Image (cartoon, rainbow, N blue to C red; front, side, top):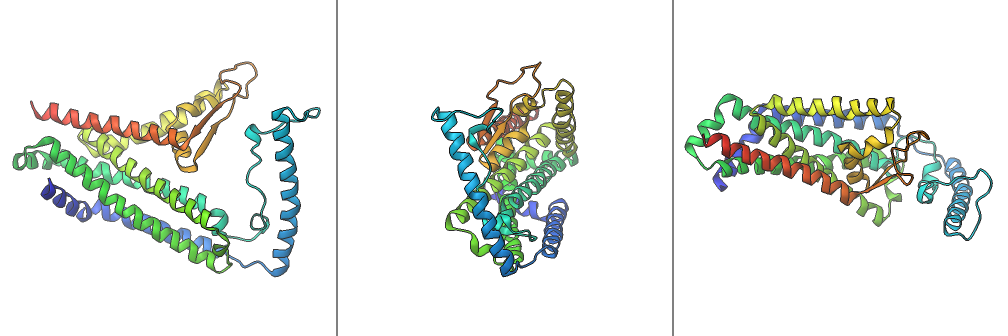
Length: 330
């Protein structure tokens, strides 16, 4: 098993698809870094002072709204006429001077969206690398030749899967580290990095772990689908079909019947969002004549999102191992 893993690890990083993928995501990082560097500007002392004053005023209003909403929901106060409140009194983040500054790039303010972008890039890249890593073996006959040398079907497929996941996991960690360092360097010119607290840096690290785990899930999913279909194009076709027919198609379908919010509960993208953002709300149905969604809507946590993703990957991976044993035993 160890020799198989070492051989597959070396093969993973010697393949042109892997190298091209690494170059592409590296070029994407360079373009994004260059683009954000063009929007970087340092606020003047007058702008900082104005932002502090505006933030203090807005924060006071935010505090009053949250307190009033909580009192109404607990029965301590009565809601005014035509007064409405957001679910769970969620008025968004409390205004801060940084959020009031109208300057370009701010790592302190924008790092979550940067990490979510990195998650999409790495998950898609992992899916492609994982699918091609085993798919080309089946389509070229290399898998059959390898099984003659090492007839342990389960061990061979497991070694390939572990090598693909471990290899791309390492790539994800390195890439995310460089990604973070690059944007922190861009932000260093206007001092936004120093405004982050230790708790915010802890949240950044936890989000980074979620990004890497999502990339591993994408790699394992692409690998398993390609192994089931015995070809790289099978995984790519399934992935494209899911996105175009189900994710986008379901959105159009539910829009026609005016149950857009209900479809969110049955889309994988919703649970990926819950996994990355810690929480995701499936809003209630806006159609008063349908009532397809319960009035309270649905709420998804990062635990639920992770469980759904893990369950999907586990089912497909187990199916790939079962399919390999059955087909190769004939």
